[in-house]
Length: 502
Image (cartoon, rainbow, N blue to C red; front, side):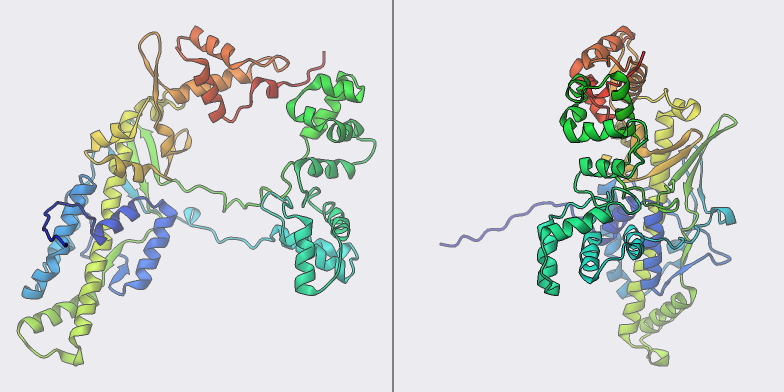
């Protein structure tokens, strides 16, 4: 038997405009520039630049949090119904451009100086192309050239060949009908591994290092011992069991050091590092300077154009709206579909401009709150970082924690002491014996300093480091030291051991 019933409940839903604002908020500077270009291409009512009587569009009041903004967006989304009835636009209100900034001196950096413009990407040769160019010097026959092409195409970003040779044999037989064996592939692989960079297409680290050693002159100090270490005592080498290596190879400390140092100078990832300076460059989203006792906070907008609603299309829409209100027949044969298209595109352009400026307000407010909480850091640099969590910033700017998280994620700030990711400023705190709160990042820096100064022949255990920290006033457990050490990518004491000759 079917039961019908009615249920009334309240739900919070984000409007399309609010979703757009959230997505723009979490974009870094370079991604925002691309997003603006895409919107300019898709919306004819959106244009670059400012008209003489226009200024930057900025909302009168900042968004308080995601929920309030959703309610505001939902309310404004209902306005088209009212427009259909009255067909009037308050253009002065829609395009009001008051620039209201908060807290510290803050501005948007739209500098277009020649030395700060994006440089064009230079043409470069990929690793695969570089290897194929060298194949001409190997005098390969047709089958060998086919095998070499398959091998080069299977090399990963680190320069390793992790594809089974059996798969290469099967592919060539299936696609080209050539009969061959794994030994044929192995023979060609050995020749490719000796191309530049040497060790490319190795199947594991051990093979990569052995190939590099094999092409060295025989009179290189430590070469034979290094080969012996990798071939006969590789496991002991990875665990730094120096006594086992010396016993197995019958060598003294001096010979062990010569071979070990030579291995450490080899390239473990011959295919890595293929990045140009332009590709590996971080574009800061903020710049913070301390000048004459005050902080100057700038939002990077150097390549983001100023936006406006097209005056030509705007005038056309005003005329069409007025004609419809007077129930006149549209001039120039413009139909209702065209008028509706212009109205929709106008609403889209208006929302996009407002979202861009709401993003600007929110980002500046978050950055100002971070500077306020980390004032000593921006004045004096590392060593003065205070404990801070997302909620601390959210409480200052009266916004939701999720909004702060979106602003912080993937954004960078240029300070007087270098470029830092915004996430760097957020950390948990520890209390010293004196009752002072210290960021765990400062404790990590102390641990790193202790390890750098330790006796490399007898590295410090995590328990010993915890005792040393306790002597400096930090009540910290051994397992916490282990956690921080692992976060710093520092190996255990046994793997930090080095050979030091007397």
